[in-house]
Image (cartoon, rainbow, N blue to C red):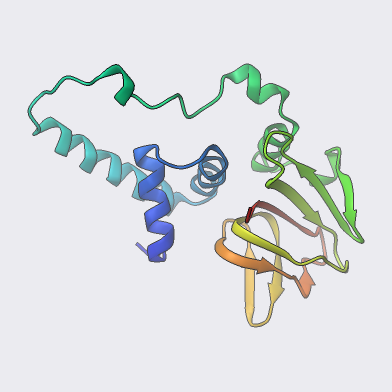
Length: 180
């Protein structure tokens, strides 16, 4: 695969169900946008299934079972960030969402449960605040900084978002998990 080691580890953690809910959400969106990531996760699932088939059965204690990772559908329907993310992944225009002004040219929708997970729309030609993120996924459009150009489907880990050029036609939508 053509992923960095850190992204491969996140995909492995996704497959094993050990990510936080926020990380799980971002990696799910990454897999949705990236067919190679989906194939990688399927391969990991197959390998894990093969390993489990060859292990002798053993009883689990009830306290060994983790709590459910995914909240109920009703909880997701009440979360405006989940609704906005679904809207973006369905390739609908980001301007149709109910954004809050965050900075000049930046609109955001912040997860009401964590405050660290946010969906940001950077308008073309805008000035930007600098965000230190644990994980960022470009959902729509692109932005450039230094010598890098990040476009829809790209994921970045442990970075500072400081765009110098934003997609001139439509702006850029980024799903970010901020460092706490």
